[in-house]
Image (cartoon, rainbow, N blue to C red):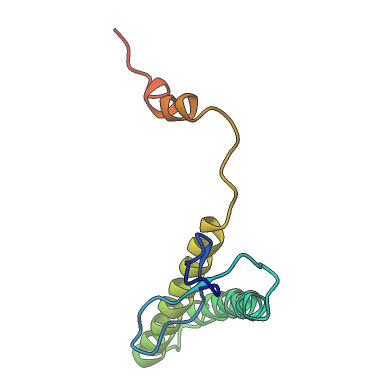
Length: 118
């Protein structure tokens, strides 16, 4: 909120949950604020961690001696990494600029591209 009590239309989904596990958003028009930079850094760490975990998973799956407990633990970490990556994708996608062009023409694309024939 700004000093006038108006909430910015620019909401950013943050890469960490709120105190009760709910989604957390940052309302700012400054994409270079300290909190925005911190969120960017955490997103990068989350994506790097996911990539490392994926490499580790590939190695574990090649090992015939991996037991069920290890695979369950791996599955839980992979689920966490996927959840983080999906949140990053949603956050970044929500900040993409709207495509330029006529809204009416853009709205027609899915129906005209459906390939219906007479």
